[in-house]
Each structure stands twice: as structure tokens, then as C-alpha cells.
Image 1: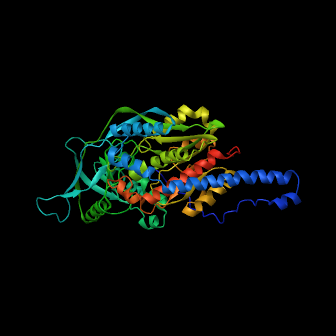
Image 2 (image 1 turned 180 degrees about the vertical axis):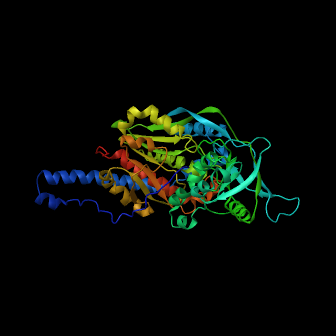
Image 3 (image 1 turned 60 degrees about the vertical axis):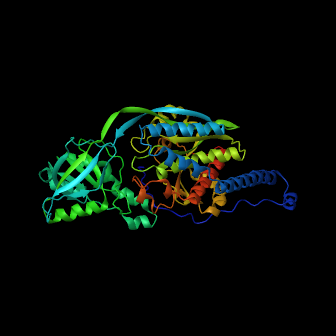
Length: 487
């Protein structure tokens, strides 16, 4: 999940109380249009608040999202774009939305079809080596990497701590070698719930480290895994197209090679048999609960259905899809017929090339004027704190009832941001569509992100239900507001 949150968290200073409702006595003492207008405004506000509270409580009591996330993670499993599991997952979500009575479209999209293959690494020469031995290096290919020749590549390892050090070595110090970028993830920053900025500091080496190394003649590139929890877990993720193979090594193995390289010559044998096959066909799942008054106006709730192939994609991002599905299920359960259309989207191929999002932007661009708002959750399933909001401040004022209702769950923040809070909904930003992304307790998210440990057991059912409550309450307010939503 390429998500980089570089905007500092600004805590809202206070929450304004709802406008007071005039008593009958006050109304008699203050006759005229103003008093009547105030009464008319207050009644819908109270009705909306009661509906939002009912929705919140139903979400907290429901295990719908947990059950469907279990199926996506445990029964279907890893959902790499282009894989049979990804396509089967799209059909599963579509069928469930049809069962609820939504109008479902599987929007076809071309997706990359990259397969991992065999991946091994070993140090074959290093200072102090016992005769006849090697040391295993735990690694995983980066998404989209080229493979090595079948027999692998063997070369000296050169270690750098940043791009500047690589440039300082020049072609003479890099050509024909394997470059290791040993740039640690800031676990102390993540512990302060600033995991997004911590990730942002290191993910550039995963994204374009191979390009920089290739430019100076390297034969392969390695990056220290972009994540915390040093349990010798490698973290995969997308990279920019490069002409050399690239892999992520564990933090422990990065430190090992760095230490040995400081003592003398280190040589490595690397085998990656990954390959890129011809593009495949997959689909975004689009499911509409039609609006009663403005069916042409759309409020999106969403997550991305694809995942990396090491784990089973529970927190990244089966959880987001399950939240969106549960939002629709709650509307149906409570008999809510929204004014605007509620649109559930399970995006395809967020992890690699965002082809599903790009297809949606291309096919629906003419309708963006009628897209009232979009919500995406792609930050895991930790306890929710509220939403990042790329939206007109006037809209945030109208959402005060949402904050009041969600205060009981601790998910009341509406944090303005200058950028799209999530990847798949970003194309709507240019059209001025209000965009929302969940703020969650992300202190441990990057411990499991893009690893074999992204599995269903990492999801706390209570926290998942709290996330559903937050998404459903915000979506209900956005679909039900009588006002035209400001951009």
C-alpha cells in the first residue's frame, strides 16, 4: 500500500455544540420567519443525529465485516493483481453485494501480471568466514522486479545509507556490484503514531533505489525493508521499472551485511526467478444503493481488494473492503434509503500500478461533477481516530453531527489535509470532490505491512467494528444532507 502521510496531525481544538432548539415559549415570544426557519433546521438535525446514533450502535454490534474479512483472508487468500484469487475475490464481493440488493457492475480493467518465483540470497565470501560455509540472507523480490539469470548473479556488495552516498561512490565504485541501501525505518516515530511519515522517509529507496543503482552500473539492488518489527521479516512493495533485479532484505540481514562490509570484501549470490507476464483482465467491483432523491449524486465508500502475495492481505486491505461492504449491509439492515447513491467500490491493483483507479477515472470522468464525496480506508484495521479530509472547510462544519456521534468511539477527528488521503480516490481530487481517509492507530501497522505476517489474526474484531461505525456514520451524513455539498 503506497500511502505516505506527510501532513502533521492537527487536533481540533473544540467541537461546537449543535444549535439550540427554541422552546415553544421562545417561539411564541419570537414569532416570524426567523423562528420558523430555526425550527425547520433543528428538526432534521435531530432526526439525522438519531439515525446516525442508531447506525453507529448497529455497526458496533455487528460481526458482518469480520466474517467477510475472514473469508477474503483465510478462504480466498493472497490476491495479487492478475492472480486467480484476485479475480475470485472480485466475484465474491460482487455476489454478496447482489445478495444485499445493490446494483453491481464488475468494471473490467487491465492489470499487470507479475509472478514471484524463487528468491534466495547467500553470502559466499566475507571476513572471518568458516571454510566451506555460506550465510543465508532472508529477502523477497520487490513487486515488478526483473529476474536474475536462472543461475543467479554473483557480485561484491556495496552498502550505502542514502542516495548521496551512492552518488559519491560514482560508477567506479558501483559498476558490476550489488548495491544495498541500508536505511532504517524510524520505529520511535511510528511508536508516536507517526508511522506514515516514518514510512515516507524510507519508501523512496524501495521505489527508485534500483533505478539509481542501475544508472551507475550496478547488477542488482537490495533495500532494507520499509517497516518495523525486526523479526527477520522482509517487506515487499512496488518499485519503479528498472533494468536490474531488486529485492528487500530484512533489517537484521541489512545490518549483518553492513557490518561485514565494514570489515572487508563481501560477495553475494542472488537468485530471483520473478517475471512479468502479459497483462491480465480483472475488475473493480462497483455496487450501488440507489439514492431516492438524487440517484445521480454518488458517495463512495471503498477499500482495495488486491494484496501482495506474501501474506493474505487482511490489514492491507481486505479490512477496507470489508468496512465498505458492511456500510452497505447496515444501510439495508436498518432500512436506510439514502437521498444520494451510496456506491461501494472494491478497487483492483492499488498495490502495483493503480490500474483499477485509473480505469474508473477514465470511464467516469464525465460523472465527477455528480460525485458528492469519496471515502477510502487503506490504513489497516487499528482503532479509528477519525478522518483525514481533503475538503472545503464549509463541508467540515456541516459534519459536526458526525463528530458528536462518533465521539463515543473516539473516532471524532476531522483532520484537514492538502492532499488526497488515499491512493485510489486521488484522481477525484482534480474535480474538487471531497475526499476522506481513515485515521487509525497505526503504531504497529508497518510491522506487518507487505509481509507474510499480514494475516487475519492481526485484526481485532472490536477495532474493525469501530472502523465500520466511523465509515458508515460519515457515509450516511454525506448521503443524507439536504444541502448541496460544498467543494
